[in-house]
Image (cartoon, rainbow, N blue to C red; front, side, top):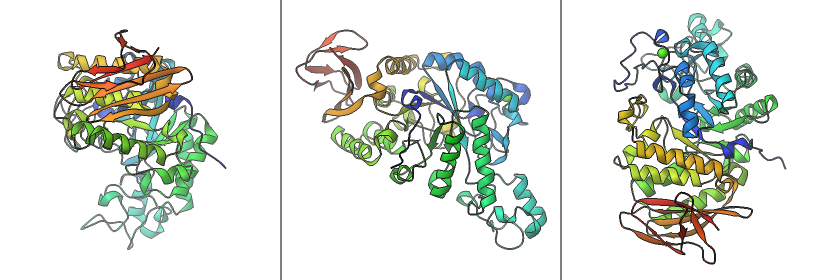
Length: 452
Ligand SMILES: [Ca+2]
């Protein structure tokens, strides 16, 4: 039977997720008209002037953080700050620096061992896309009429759209994916950027796409480059997508949900959390579990720190869990320095480059976790065993060959004593001290230990 074969680099990766308008403004000359001051709170329509030059400039910062792969939300020509309203899938937005800036960024990132995954928005485009504009101008005589699903003789947005559009948004007309030329067009987009050298696609709104189309994208990408990664945005359980052999991994929102219940809301205790994680593990093929993109937050949900009432210690516990668990841990830009934000658009604030505003202790934690993950193969490729879950404390074991690493985590305010597996010695990976079989853990803290 045919199985998915995710590229091995994914299980070793540390992702960094960037919303390009908000990370770094490297070239004020390309700012869209009306660009807001960098520190202004974002609104649904505001631009902050971030661009690809800015990302390029900050590659050393990302390298030092331990990042090995970038996921960029859409960068193709569009009208909004989020660019999910694509108007030209073959052109990088000039307000981000255009094709040249992207080529330079890609080459520089690869030169520093950092891969680049782009956002593929194949469910819908923007109303400014020339094909949709043609349907508006020429009505049924347009060769692109059948590329969309339109009732009546002209697409009309008012009083409400008479064409299929994403979540009822008139500015996001949906592609008619039952129309073969649409599929060919989007498959040519997928192939084009892989040929240009990107390392994979994150496919937007996968749950709304026909599975056989996603499977065709997957195959096209792998034909261009078997080492490319196909990641799906899936909010629910992703089992069927792996059965369709249409994705290498998904953005693991189900895992994030469990972390929110356990750490932020404290509505789940450790046994319930462990049960949920074991259930998810059993639902996916092993190779997919190692190829999922694991996250605390994204541009679509409130920041984890904000959900934790600003408690840095809980962010550190969440990050420790991601970095000790299979899958590629992802850092949503700014989480590592303590950036906060509620629902969209607040979760899309600009990165605070004034270092006086950074949570340095948290940044050190993220850097340390990334380093340990790089140094300890067991954390990347090891199998998973839950050896303890009681109250709000847990012990997770990762073993690869002779090597074994334990994550001991205490998510309550009081000190807890957690049992490590007997008959062996454990050494703290940071402090080098030995640990006995009953490990005292201060409130809201974790330790990573190695057997031997
Ligand atoms: Ca700019």
